[in-house]
Image (cartoon, rainbow, N blue to C red; front, side, top):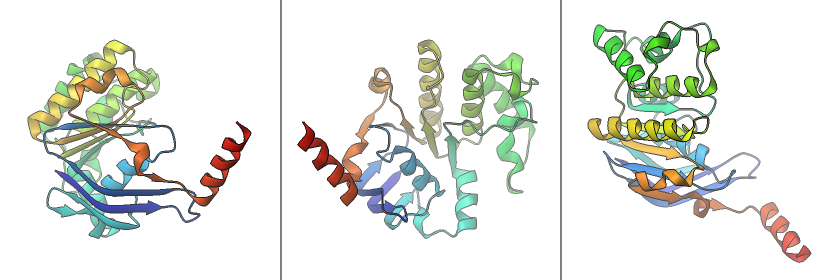
Length: 234
């Protein structure tokens, strides 16, 4: 479970302020975040993962207070507990497809490549019709294929939280549906929480919870001035 309490975040120039009073995301369930660009959706995912430290408030993932962890502890927590699908995939060009999926096993000595994990990586690739690509360089893949590799990597260690930032953005409708089904099936099976950001509203009925994110964005003084000027022009 993810529990948010009085969470705040702002950049140093204070051009962006995020405030979430209370938000709970249950284990084994799926939530989708929607909202316009710039409303803080990706920032929120990075706060949960511990990539960004919060300005205030609490983020609890399971029994862990993420906001209280040191930088090193947040990195280890993220490796062991959070699977992330980034917008830009973050694949390693000199590794083949299978080794990219197994990449989490090469980051910290607490996680090593085992026969079981190799088999799981192959099964995940098979579920997305990528078995024949295992030994292929990721530089030879299409954008949609690279996206599928990134999703398999995020699911490899059966994390308790999966954060997916526009995971279907480069996919056709058929593969987009397949991706969402895989994410939901895997997270439900392991009792994990799935949080996905999307602009594709056709996918919303597949989720347990829909979170309109613009409600959490606080307008800065500059934003309000711009809004007043715009309203004066109409």
